[in-house]
Length: 418
Ligand code: PLP
Image (cartoon, rainbow, N blue to C red; front, side, top):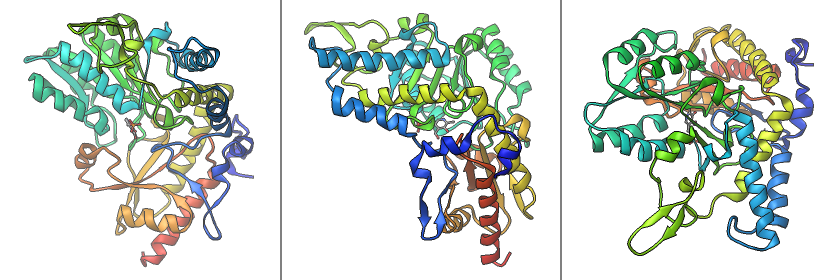
């Protein structure tokens, strides 16, 4: 029995682990795999793979085009998945759910469409120092072209957003958009987005959430938050790669120009000009990732059956235990705030042991973690760190995995004579 069981996780984790055959293997001979890299990409349950293979083996045809039974079946499954996503984040309409490839493409869509149409010299976009590159670089590219200014909310030593600086930006600058991550992929910080959205709206700015690390782990309700845009990736929430989502308020999406041109996104094309299709298709040019969308629908079903509140409660137990155990290790420092303000990840540095060496030595013990800047170079520069080692957790992880991680760290230290 694991400590998680003793601490009464609301979920039957052993039953959940049975849905993920990939977890049941040895990473190296005699070394069972301990998978602690779900923040990069989560594993997929059998239910998701089954939904995709059923579609591919029995129901595949292109969507929206065929007037035959098979194409109608494919279209129904593809659109049913969109409806599942709508319910999952409580959007008002299916038209507000745009399929993309991932969070990165969702942010680029907002920058390339809304941003290019609405931002110019004198305008300000507010990001934060803790952002993933996918919520920095698209804005930098556009700022070069359109001449607006980017401001970054500083991050405190503890790993929290400096909300006083945020308020000052909103009061003193012509801010048109705030785009901030909900949960940090390095610090684990859960940012107080509800209040930040109210403040942004009061200042006349729109708000976009990068939900890559929140939507997989906790209930995100776009209506309750009143958020304008939300970006997330299927592959971090038990779904396949190649499918992501941009949620946008309908009134905003209606007013935005297309992001990409091609088939399916038009109503009428002449050699002189074209007219755009209705939402969401205006933003979905070309043949979409049909099997992947269906897989995402199955992932949403899976998470919904477990219950997002249960998933969060379970992960809190594991993360709290990880913080406790990791802090016992001499010379090891976990980045970010205490367990009550974080979710999902523990990134750490160790005296006398480089992050990449640590990850390599942990791999020898079967423990899969990630080392590097985790696509958050500015955040690492903020802490004067070239790299960190990151263990990240999902619903299938247990405190036994944390024990394996800690034991592997002690073994790595021994090997280095620390
Ligand atoms: N935002 C955050 C917070 C992330 O952690 C990631 C991926 O790690 C991304 C954005 C980018 O996600 P994707 O590579 O799926 O586009």
